[in-house]
Length: 398
Image (cartoon, rainbow, N blue to C red; front, side):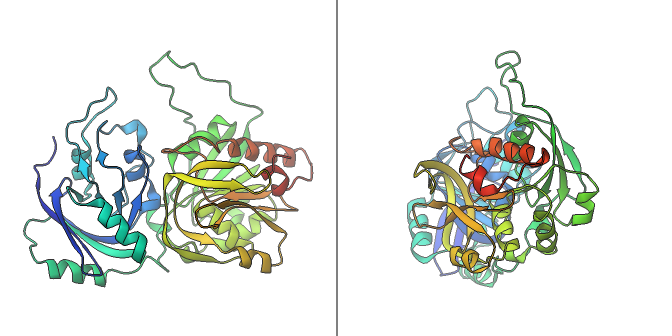
């Protein structure tokens, strides 16, 4: 049952206050305000651990139409601090729906705000950049000035290790592949063989990444972010995967030295935060973007072919291109974002290492770049067979 509507507000650190209706848990939370431009997939966005510590505003106007179901969750629970939409539906219509979005938000302890001018909010973030906010759905807290003060006092997400909040506590095996629809409707396609064993670092991994690894013939063993290189070696993997995750990549503790060591021994593929961590391990640096890339309609250009794919992205940091060139490693920039020319992909010219900033697994988003999972399998198989294969070769389809 959906919670009863009540007054709610979002206060920004610059003093701006938006008044609307509460659609989730009755609570007060602070976080870094960002916006997502996806038209669909709000449940996958809500359950993406990459949003830890953030208040997410949707630019699409109508959210909640199809409700919520457990099969589409990207993690065990939401980690974001708040949710904002122009119109948020409490009466979904979909045969897969198990509960309404407001009921899900209330059960998950997430405050949600609707009936505000989301265009004005998005324009403010685009113009001024990331800033902290305080979302209140508590009817007992009436003072706007107190909400603004809380937003101002909230800690910046820079230099905070958010990965430690979302990574798994213990290692586990993942065996689930793609959802096949109604039983018997979509027969399972044969997965490629032979099976290859991959150790996947969980920095906040989305389940659809793990599903895609399974679909592409990998035996997936997920490990916590704090797993050492020696512990990984003991698992006898064929390859290493570095997952997506939240926040500042330079603040993730106890990871870089182990990733650095593993890049000398195994094929490595990274996505999003994993891409940034690989860039740091190869001697590069990262920088915070003005308002980040969040949505399923980002243009990514392949520099080898000139082709442009529409990509799903969710990050607030980028690898600095010049730092990679100055690091002395044989690293090539393979892809860029056409909106701002930031680094979207990198690959090593001598070793089997490559990564992409965007999300080839989508969920939500287009499937234009799902082929990177096939390239990861190809690189791993060639390396296992003793071939001297580089990430740059594979990233270019060679």
